[in-house]
Structures are given as C-alpha cells and as structure tokens.
Amino acid sequence: MKIWIDIVNTPHVHFFHNIIKQLEKDGHEVIITTRKFSDIQDLLDILGLNYTSIGKHGVTLKEKLLNSTKRAYELSEFIINQDIDIAIAKHSIEMPRVAFGLKIPNIFILDNEHAIAANKLTLPLVDNLIIPEILNVWDVIKAGADPNKIIRYNGTCEITHIDNITYNDNIFEELELNLKKDKTILMRPEPSLASYLDADCTKSVLTPIIESLKDQANILVLPRFKEQSQIFKNDTDIYLLKTPLDTFSLMKKCDLIIGAGGTMNREAALIGTPVISCYPGKQLAVDKYYEKKGLLNRSLNLNEIIELSEKLLKKSNDNNKIKTDDLKQIVLDTIYSIKS
Image 1: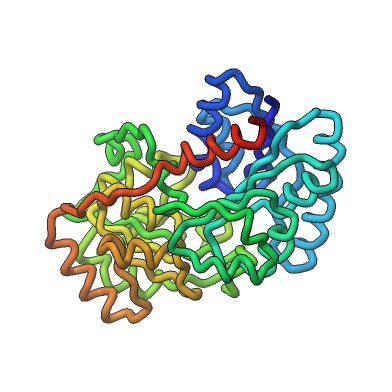
Image 2 (image 1 turned 90 degrees about the vertical axis):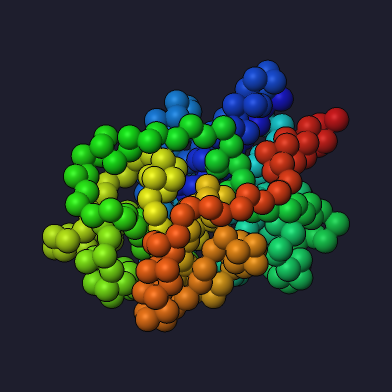
C-alpha cells in the first residue's frame, strides 16, 4: 500500500514515528507531508523521516484562513499524482478535504474536543475517527462526525509517544545546564498560537509561578516558538532552553513539570514525573483522564500551585503505571482493515 500521513504539529511526529516504522517494516510506502511550524521539520530530520513540506501555519484568523486554503490546494496538486491508498492525520485541517476530494479513504486521530472550528471543518469528511474513551462522543458528533465511524480506545495519544523510548540520564550535563539547586522544575508555556486558545503571545501564565519558585528549585523553561522565548529572555534566574532537544529524557530527569499546555503534561504523567497543569483554557477530557488516575494535578490559583509544587518536590517520583490500550496497534489495524 501507499499511505499518506500529514503531520502538522510537533507532537504528531512522536505520535506517528513508530507507526511509520512499522508500516515500512511491513513493506508499505509512506508519504509524509508537513508544514512550516515550530520544530516539526527539525524533529523529522532528527528521526530520519523523509518528508515534503507544503504550506505554513497562520497566526491571525486571516492568515489561518488564507494559509490553510492555499495549503489544501498545494497538497491536492502534490497528492493527485501519488496514487495514495489511505490518508491519515491527527488534527490536520487540510488532509480530510484533500482525501475527500480525491476519494482517498482516510483515518483521523482526534483528542481535542474544544477545537470546535477545526473539528467542524474536518469531521464531516472523515471516514474513520479514532478518539479516546474519556472524550464525550457527543462532542464530536455535534461537530459532524458519523457515529458509525468512531473507534474508541482507553488512554490518550501520548501512549504512542513514549513507546520504546530510551532515556538519557546525562541530559542535564549534555545541555550544559550547570544547575545550582537540588531540585529541578521544567515549565512549558501555553500554546498561545493555537486557534482554540485565546491567548496573548507576549505574556505567559508561568511568569508569576517562576517568580514564586525560582528560589526553591532550578527553573527550566521550554518555549514553543521564538517569539515566546522573548517573554523570559531577561530573567537571569532561569534556564531558557532551545528546541529541538530530548524532551522525554528531560522530563524523566526533572523533579516536577509545570505545564500551561497539554501534550508534555500527559507525556510526563505516563513517564512518571509529577505534573501540575496550569492550562488557561477549558480543561480537555484527555487531561481529566490523567487527573482521575492521580497522575496529573490541575490548578489556576497561584497560591495552590506554589503549595502543591513544594509538596511534590518533597516526594519521590513513585507515580503508578496505568494500563491502556495499544493505540499504535489500533491505528495499524484500522489501516489494514480498510484494504482487507
């Protein structure tokens, strides 16, 4: 088979990496497309995955509309001559439109029920929709998903991210961090460019948290994009990290993760590092999943976050492992069922 995978965000590289390797091992050809956004292409290069870059991300509503429309056209021109058997993506706006127009069977991975605009643009055109069990099915049906085409699983997408991961215990030394304190906290700012979060790119909810905790622990800050790093560049009491880097080893090595986003928080929960979510938007069902399992803490109150941080820093990292479905196999089985 010839399988087209459209990768439009950095975490999706980790999601699809092992799936791509298995498909290639099984003798299938995988065509990867991506766009200019964040560190997607750097990470694809590091993992040795060949790809074609088409289009770019937009910041304003006008840019999002124009860039997405242009990308759908350019993807169509590229894919139309590829003789694709199956198309697959996670939260790509353009893949379902192109696949529908070219009558290519498609598989769509979704884990954000609050990305309403994006979901309305994509779900009516999806042939097979894979979602977590924790996500309310009605949320995707309201956005246009066919209830007869929904496949559910126990867990979240991050299950595939940490599959077969080897951790580097010398990550601090290799990053030349020269840490001064005994405890280390990794902080991740909010996804302020995302269409589903109304956020100011020049500010971060992490700023007062950093000020309150920087005397108690080493503070590592991992911005999402260049402009976001400007928020923290003048703070000499923190370690401002640059991507791409081995985030899995970094999370494993740190004593606490404080994240204003989602993916890294959930990855840390699976890895076993204590996590506090201060995501400023409406809580996602996939985050509630880890909160219910006791692997993720959530608060938007500064005093609560500080108190909880101090408590977690004194504890050993002894989070319980959880049992989940094999999402990688579910995706592969869905691919093979289409052409069986």
